[in-house]
Image 1 (spheres, helix red, strand yellow):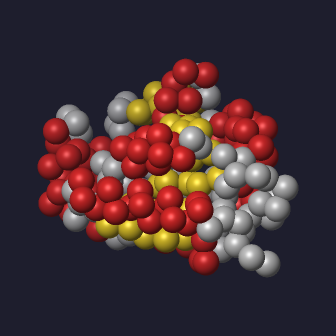
Image 2: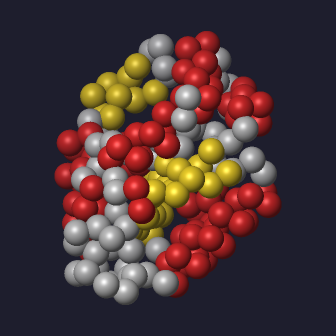
Length: 177
């Protein structure tokens, strides 16, 4: 459990993984089922201008991690959040009670990303991240291993099962000390 978890009445969950693994779909379904607040970091960065400009090669904003963390601090202390982002190493460890890493078969992921219009460096970088399990390793290095879980996210059945798994976890939170 996160250090501040005992003060919070509801848990904070990070849903992470390579783009295209189903983070937003999973997070939205979880938020609807649990009444936890879904915070999509990409949307937040765009809405509040929490970035340092645009990366032409990767076709995305360069987020300002300090501004993002400052923006989220109060909500995270309060608890009851599902944070949805493809990175995880810059968030304070104390914020999260569960870190869910979604993983997708490379062929499925390739198809999803090309349908989104990913190409060139943006496509190859994301496929390589999934092949080398970069996000899973990042999560394991950034958070206590006992709060990090990896879930397969290849299809609707997987997403449904993943949502049920996390709902079961929420029902048992906080763990007995």
